[in-house]
Length: 149
Length: 248
Image: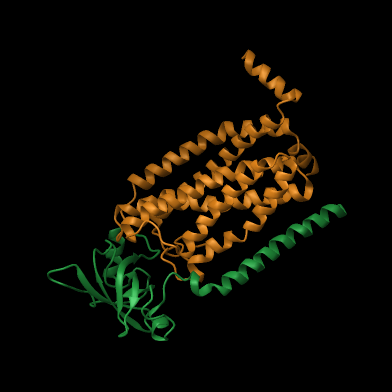
């Protein structure tokens, strides 16, 4: 290769390398801020601030959803299978919200460690299948991730 | 090998060959788009959890995938222009930017429309969505930067450097759902291991992704042809072409 072209090739490679390193360092330094939510384990470890606007996300524990009879108030528990955080919320839940499904609650933790949510979003997983396939999997005793129940 | 490279550098040759490629690729692309759309929207089962709303995946995922791949095309063309001073690479880079911007915009728009019924929100500042917005700004930045220069050679250099620096964003977008907690779910189509989307839904999706790649290629070639005519408008071959078209 022509020496000048070779030099320009190295210049391009250095440009890509150094911009990657710079961006890599910035994202590493800001990794806590890039996470959309705290996991229940983070909350249990005291990493989440109390009384400030934050988000907490995890799976809604089976059997934990309690709805009020006369209002839109609802309470449930989210877990990451290491720790749990109770959530109280008053408002309309997204259609895909359900027990055993992912959810992200935004609001603030009170002094008792309860999440006072002002918004609840449903977090769905990457599994797509027709209802018949889901039923067949259910009957065979495996969940949609192929794990034995 | 080298003669091919030299031909690639010749505008009339590139104009001719791209014309004959487009003659068969364009109808094939439109056919694949229509077939994939009909297959995905009408002949696949609804999802066990999301019902019919998941069908927007047949636009959302292909647009996002090709928006990322298109960025590599733009950045590599920029690099070839920087290193070998190849004018046709500059034409390709300039032509790719607005197409990539349009695809990124489609991915963001369909994502917002999909997010409302499933997540419960149009927009959230999670890592995937924010890095995708940065991709849109990078594409628009290249378009704007190119227009900001009067000297087209300086414009090509500046845009090549911008797109090479922005290339670091592509793996970040791709891995964002694995590296950080995000609302966006991880990828369903996996290169290693089993995909977590049922085969009956996967095949029309793969057809749509292929069709979008072909669509990107068609748009890129058409854009490049237009740019070639604009740049070479004073040359003999363009004049001959215009006279031929005028007579016919």
